[in-house]
Image 1: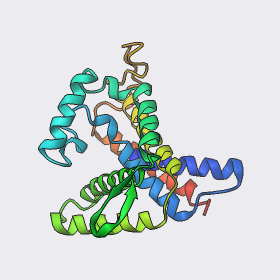
Image 2: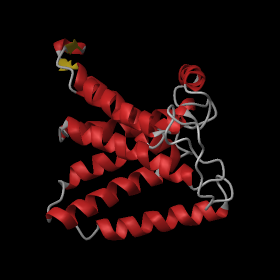
Image 3: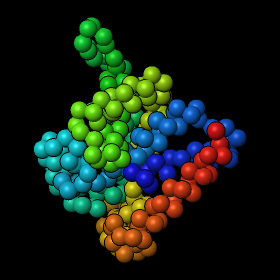
Image 4: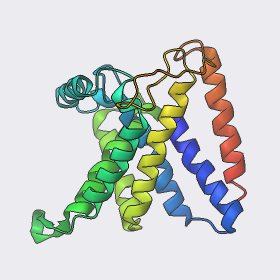
Length: 225
C-alpha cells in the first residue's frame, strides 16, 4: 500500500514539474488512497494476502479461483497484461451509464456504484492497516465517513482508473526487488525477473527501503500544492 500511495504522489509531483499544474488537493488525496488499494490487487491470487481476507470466506474463495486461473502466486496477476486489463476493466465499469435503484427512491449509475464499492474496499483496508486495534463497528463508520467525503468531491472516472492502474504497476516494481521476482510478460513469456535488492519479503531492508521511498516522495510532492 505504501508503494502504491508513494507512486501516485510521485506521479503528481512529476506532473507538477512538467506542466506547472497540479490536481486539486482533495482529488490528489483520493487518488493516493485508491492507488494504495490498487497496489493490493496483484495479491488477489493467494488466500493468504491481506486483500483476500477482507470479506472473509467470500474473498478467500475468490482468491483461490483467481490463483488457479492465473497460475498461482506471482504469476499472471504480477504481469503488465494484468495491470493493463485492470485499467481497461475499471474504465469500462466506472463509465457504465445504467442506473441502479437505491433506498428511498434514490438512483445512481452503475459506474458510480462501482466507484463507491471500490472506495469502500480500499479505505477499509487502509483503516485496518493503520488502526488494527479499532473494532469493526467504529472502523466501518470511519470508512463510511471517509468514502462520503470523497464522493462529495465527485472525482472523475479517469482519475480513479489512473490511480488503480498506477497502484497495480507499483506492486510489480516492488515485487521485482525480491528474490522471487515476477513474470512481467506473462502469458507471452514465463521468464521470471528479479533484481534481488531485498533478501526476503518483510525483512529489515524492505522496511527501510519503503520508509525512505515514502518520505522522499512526500517531500517531493509537498512542493506542489
